[in-house]
Length: 120
Image (cartoon, rainbow, N blue to C red; front, side):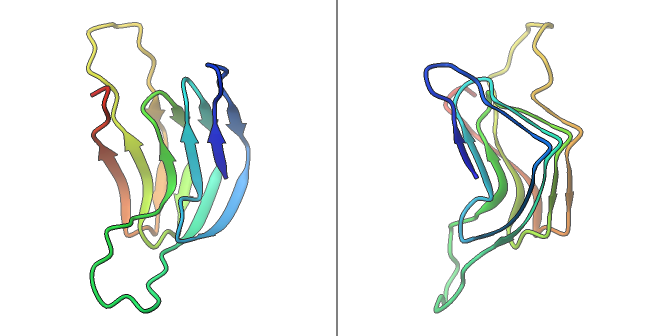
């Protein structure tokens, strides 16, 4: 599932069940202020056919940008990363809402990976 907001129109992905992706992110979200909430996704498979060395490609069950609201989701059974989240810039603004909250990762090689984004 690949979601990309166009022209600053945020997308809403809620209440979905997504199972199995092969050598790619299961849920990839790009754009500004998207909302990904209460989804169940898993079975992200890493293709290692014919690979005899470490492969740097790490598919994630949820791979989202820092401007996405990622709340109340479950990532399960991934052969690599459950949640790959690109960090947001630091702020002293007390009105900033929690963009990543109440997510759970079960039976993944890595539960979560916070990546450095241009904003941070």
